Image 1 (cartoon, rainbow, N blue to C red):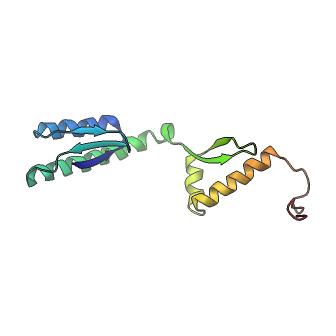
Image 2: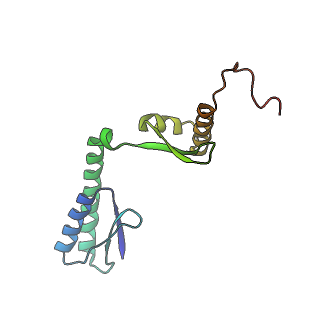
Image 3: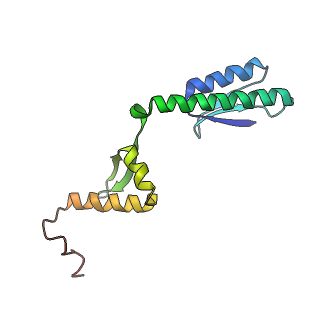
Amino acid sequence: MLEYVFFDEGIREKFAEFVRGHGLECRFSDEDGLIALIPEDMDDEVSDAIDQCYELLLQETAELLEEETVEKSAAGVMVQLSDGTPCQVRLDPNLMARLLGCLSLEELRDFVQEVALAVENPDAGPICHSPNQNK
C-alpha cells in the first residue's frame, strides 16, 4: 500500500474521493497522523493523476494553514517542576521559531526548565551571587 500524509481531514477526504473515482480502494489510518492508503498496483496514467492531485491538495493545505495560522498555531516546551510534576510551558509560536533559529530544542528546554525552577524558588539576591558558588 502507498501512504499519503495529510494535515486536514477534509482534504484527505477529497483525495479519497479522487482515488475512488479512479476505481481504487482508499483506506484511512490515523495511527501516525492523517494517512490515506491506496494500492500500489495501478497503471502509470492513474499514478501520475493521483500524484498530481496530491500535490494540488498539499498546496491547498498550505493555503488553508496560512489562513488559520493565528487560530491554530501552538508551541510549547515540557518541563518538570521541583515536585516532579510535568508541566507544559506554552510559548508564542513565532517566538519559539525565532528561538529555535539560535538554540537547539534541548537548549531551549533546558533554559525554560531553569526559568520554571527559578519561578518556583525565587531568589531576590544579587545576580552576581550564584547559589551554586558555595557548593
